[in-house]
Length: 435
Image: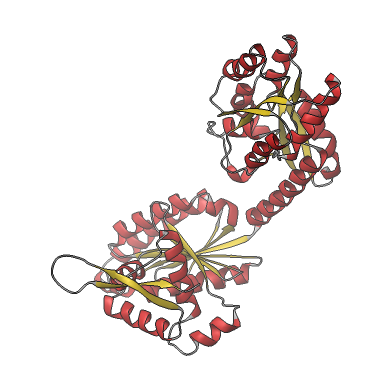
């Protein structure tokens, strides 16, 4: 059973822990409260080995956690805030002071990912004045408090709404009416539900069977060059030693096939965490054999299908004639990974009937069209030339022009302009994918 650490002020940790009880059949929860939010990184440092996942009471501790060497987007989540929580805060403080608040000072974390800021701005439609302090995780508590105190001393506000427990505490000590915005039941429960599903997906990926097929290209040539003496035997021993080292690193099971091919079985999670180490293996094998090396990886629910996908990935690389790594999954997604973390993903399956009918009128496969779409999305370009496409697909410009011509005929791409390469020569035609 996975353990989830809940991080936040004591009050928030208590509330979240209460609702987390509904999820304790699959997960266990342990609370870690702090007095000041800066303690978040210390909590991660001290307890990371005891916890599998982390849930933060809000975006502030989550943002600070990003400074930790133990930060993992896949293993961390936070309770989100919505605009209606500020409306509720205005009502609560009105009830507390016995009159409807009209002038309010609000502090809010500047979170690009959240969309609630516009809703907060709309508060001025029901209030006379709303003064907003947007802060970052690096903004000091003293600066936030000063913002509110200045408006209070100038008699421009009659209350404060804050997202910071420490700010609430200090302002109350000064006698300033203040309300702490905290996630309501629905937000907490919704986040717990989504996080639980995220953890289940993580578990599936961690335990999913993975096969790696390692292929040294031109192995017949290597054998011919070493047919006299023991050279080929020593070379094979050195190759196996290199592969056994990566096998040990990913806790894999090795099968040695013929003609420079090896198969390793492991689990998806540990393989994905060691992609760089697998590239190091490719480099070492290439130096040792003086030949290109390719690796096909297959992820599936069974050993049979994982190996099958890995062999398909090898075939894909052999057809391309390039060195590197290709991953194939059960859902048909193909990922080409280049050394240095660059990767492109596309699907080998087409489930759009209209698209299939158009592609059937060409010699272009659904996989090729999917790859073109993925490349353009990855590059974030609206228009491309035959030269650009040829470079990205590792083919001749003439072949790229043929693909463009065929796709244009069935209206999957369209001509959209020209690009002047230099003062001489004809400008290059530009095309874009049709929506």
